[in-house]
Image (cartoon, rainbow, N blue to C red; front, side, top):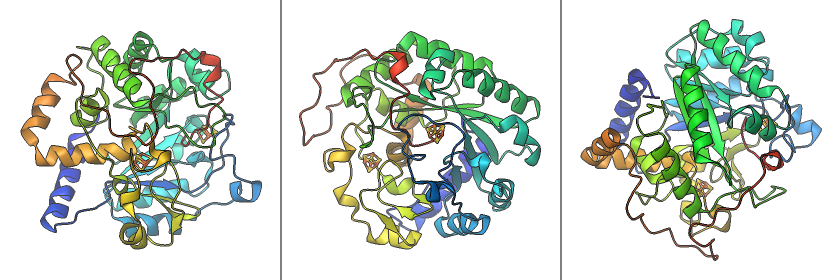
Length: 373
Ligand code: SF4
Ligand code: SF4
């Protein structure tokens, strides 16, 4: 169980309140990016590619907490850049916790050991450590040797100090299901309380596009991983129906308003994966004046092959509320790994042939555009 009961209760209550008020669109997780600067230099990263004057900028603690209040989501994911570089981060985290919101502090962990003294363990605070796989795969992903060892050392120290710790993991083309299984086993042994996993999104600025998976490949990979992991009890930090969606058993349209993004430029349209619609000045403007209908798989060319949790977890949660028995059944049996899949969503462009899995060397993984720590 990757999501604590207190959080499930509070989020469930929040969703019920939205339903009673008949709100069709509401935020679940605020993605807060108070800076783009980072202490790693993953080649092609979409954040550190900003010019130096932008990298030097920070959202102040006041601006961050105003965004939290404006948005009202019960969960806040603080990403970047590297959030632990922000001098006011302890004040920002403390302010979010004081509002009784759940904060996920996303970090590459290089500064975690040094900075953990600035934070106090709380059921509302989770360190979310970026780990894309085992030592070889993660170090290739972040373009630096030794980062995996430093990150796992930080995870152990954080756990010893009583902090909640998750890992967030992005999967790329050519992932080996058995290797992913072993990595999730290892993460579970490390004592992390949650594993967030998402297929990589094909950013426009990426230097290579052959390392991203098409929708059919994503579904087949997740079926293979779940089959390998049957009975392993990984603490996956997702709704059961989102995992079932990844395994090709549910059809969803994305709900990007469920994960609104606030960064140095404003409120990003339509989601943190791409800013095709520019930026809104206020959260209300984002929600009310964005033409949401033009975004989503099959509607917008940049959305092709997206199954990312930031767009579809909210859709799965919505389905859970509408069909609790289906959700319970799925949670009890786990994602289905056999039988026919739901049809792929429509596409404006021809997709890969079903079952096509190109092999990409691990050394190539770092040369991609990424969006988060
Ligand atoms: S399909 Fe993906 S990239 Fe497109 S709007 Fe939805 S979440 Fe964002
Ligand atoms: S991908 Fe993440 S860890 Fe790598 S440089 Fe960009 S923000 Fe930093």
